[in-house]
Length: 287
Image 1: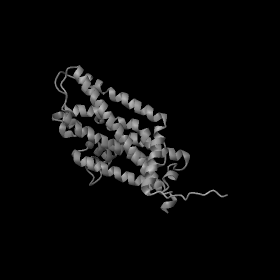
Image 2: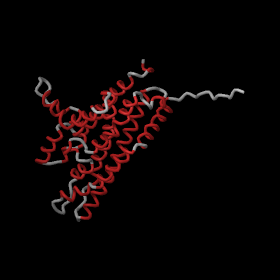
Image 3: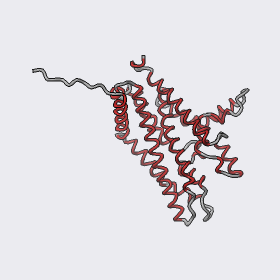
Image 4: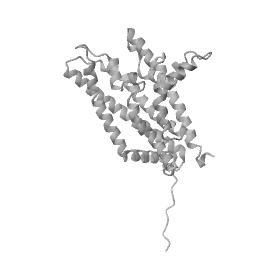
């Protein structure tokens, strides 16, 4: 007697996408390195309170800009939030894992092809980036406030810190997309990490300085992606006097924060789209 076979039910695009997202989430959760990195981030967030103790000059209230810089992982001092360096592994891992295995393992789960797989990787990456950033902000702010209370210092106006914290969370979601897209474009495990480390810190400023000598490109450095990203993270108008001038130099862009936020998100959308095109070009369904 021949057993009856159940006719397979085709997945809708939404079902395929959600299935791929579940796979990506479970894959990252199963990695020991994920939990090690998250533990390190938690410890460093708790240590944020030590920074205020070292920087206190007296019992006067800490400025909102100082508190914001501390809980958003000092983007001024390190040119990008220091949290980015820890999130590089989580951001580049899903696609670099495909390079090791030679095929997109999510594709057969997604059914609809590499496009759906790439979208799932991006969605999970953004979720993790924003969630880790939000948790870090909360832990860091609590640590910071506790340290101020223990030293008898006045609290900063925390309401004024919220916009910077919100932009930081969005920035970390964008950073996850930059990581995924860069690996897709370069199709390498090592080169994207090197590029994402060196370009924001050194290379972009050098490129901006060189391009600025060309006719019609004066001030182009203000519009480069990570100069715009720094202007998004740090509102120079919150500083006064010499501090404002010094801050503006560190940022490297004179764009106002709302404009910088919009432009950085557009840059992120553009490189994400380029990563999708590169990731999907070997997909049989795309021909």
